[in-house]
Length: 389
Ligand SMILES: Cc1ncc(COP(=O)(O)O)c(C=O)c1O
Image 1 (cartoon, rainbow, N blue to C red):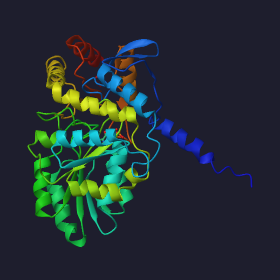
Image 2 (cartoon, helix red, strand yellow):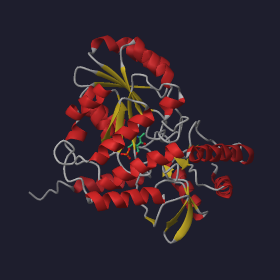
Image 3 (cartoon, rainbow, N blue to C red):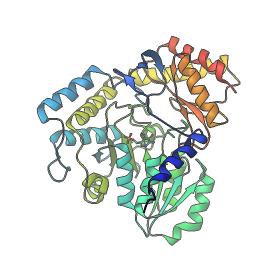
Image 4 (tube, rainbow, N blue to C red):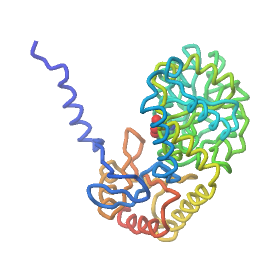
């Protein structure tokens, strides 16, 4: 046998290149903030999910260093065997207090939290309705669960209702899953209507607050708080890696949900507990977001200012509808988006092209931070002037 069973890899890479879908990593030197160092240059950073600028905050760094000195670098086992520390429980209690839920469970990433929550609460006899623009972790959680999955059109309540009407009676349990802030678009899910339909059709609702925690709501608890849905019967998932500046994920909800997940969630049971450093940094971040609401206010001020500057100076720019610090400039092909991203870089702006298969249409995705200065927002708008197609 001389055939090479891996030869298809080269061919697949050629296809990816030809479609302008090829991706590679870019290194940031030093700490990431509103300004980053890349390829030996300073660039304004509009590519980060560190919305509140906490990933470089001295208090989070000190908490991570101290936890490492006390507990060591790794948690050395799965939480149910030897990987549990009091610090994990402290963080779970803090998340539950922020979300005003009965309990919470910390996972090693937001991706694993979605996989584990979805795969635990539904199975082969059940039905999942999923917004078509949901994050990959929700989509793959749905596949992993073995449930029947139907996608409804993005934020389309009528389409969702039609699907429920047609299919709900054929299944045991039903779960509606949605991002709360859509990560590659910046718009919000219609949470109130989703909850009404869920009640009418006896469904559970899982909402992914990855881009909303620390950002939306009076206390920074997320979209659920923003829409006045605190205390509603929901499965809330989120990440510690965006506004909380650390790494890890969580599920928040009723005590029985969390107890069930501790017993049935494969991506929590069969993986090593979150490191002491990440756990302590996230705990410190929750304290900061509770004690310093002015950070969130500044993030929103920056978001409104950028939108205003664009409306005044570039009224013809095609921005996707957004109610969050995520703003997307729609472009007509992956090649145009790549070119735009490269041009922005030469103009001193880091705001990458996002292309299929991550999103259906190519775009430049820009995220605001609380730590951006007004002059930096103007610099972005000046650079954007050059890339309209
Ligand atoms: C909506 C959404 N859910 C989940 C995740 C995964 O979170 P994590 O990075 O903690 O795995 C992300 C992004 O990374 C996201 O954008």
